[in-house]
Amino acid sequence: MPIANGFLDKKDFSNEFFFNMEVGFNEELSLFQLNDHPKPEKMFNKNYPFFTGSSEYMKRHFKSYAEFVKKYLKTNSRIIEIGSNDGTFLKNFDNSENFLTGVEPSKNVADIAIKNNIPTINEFFNTVSAKKLKKFVGNTDLICASNVICHVPNLNNLIEAVDLLLSKDGVFVFEEPYLGSMFEKVSYDQIYDEHIFMFSATSISKIFSKFNFYLVDAIPQTTHGGSMRYVLKRFKNEDNESLKKIFNYEDKNNLNKIDSCLEFKKNCEISKDNITNKIKSFKDEGRTICGYAATSKSTTILNYCNIGTNYIDFICDTTKEKIGKFSPGKHIPIRDINYFHENMTDCVYLFAWNHKEEIFNKEKNFRGEWFSHVNL
Ligand code: TMP
Image (cartoon, rainbow, N blue to C red; front, top):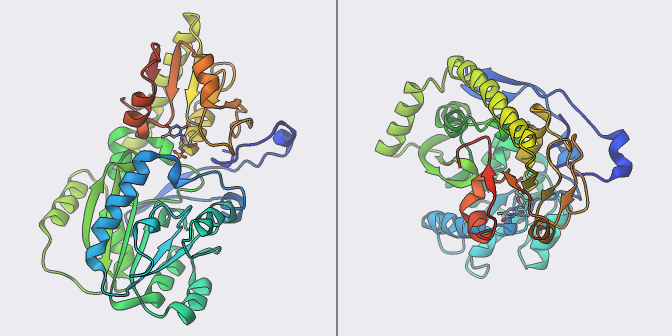
């Protein structure tokens, strides 16, 4: 596999970086994870091409996420967001009532947040940066994150950093793609270099209890094709019925055992056959195909199913950092959305299937066939 977000220029084709992507399951922690991964610096650098604010749906989601966590705030609370990207989440808090700090390792997105007056430090979140932060932020009542904890290879160190900064009755809330949804949808495109872990409530509870943190709530989210919001504290609340239901679901579906992974593996192989047969039949019928949205997830699909320019003419996307470049590994050209409007193909592979409502609404003029490896 190449780097999922490693969109590249023609001149860089010959030195493209590839690694062997393999997943495993830790039965002690019920943790689904990559066995090996590229160094984080290879992925989250000054050119990181992902901007939270590029999706209206995500902007709305982060507004409601902010509303949800406001109940944990006191007067003049300190809030830290790990992996604060362009500041889309922190923008929803009043900086004069609370003290905001974003921690973001990718310089280009951190710079946008700073330009928008969101105090941001351009660093990886770990015990080293936490010790520095502690000196000027003191204790923190609320630490939040979304789609970032699963990116951090040294999870132990991250939890130690949270422990260092969080006040005695502080709350740590984060959202990540959910193992249960990935298994149900066979959305194996969630597996790529950046997603080192695919969590469940069971695995989160087991991991954090080693550090004396307790999972006190877990709330399913529709984002990223099915995510889970986890709420952790240093003490247990009284029994939470909805959390119990989630644990029951995970037990019933063997999410705490390797059996569910083996079933998933078979389902991935079936899914691969189905999508490659579908694409081949479109071609045999003489129909043209393009991709919609050059997502990081699409890198897994295209490389695992061996789909390149022999099938897909181009992928359209709104991100200016990707337009004019080529897709990782398969080198499909990335075009802007206007190009798609002027060169509509007969069939469109919707790679951003998790944004389908937003995209279908925008693309009402497209009269051809949408398709994907998951049900649309
Ligand atoms: P991601 O799944 O890796 O987060 O990437 C989402 C990509 O989808 C990002 O490059 C922007 C693109 N996109 C569009 O091109 N049009 C859209 O309407 C939406 C919602 C996303």
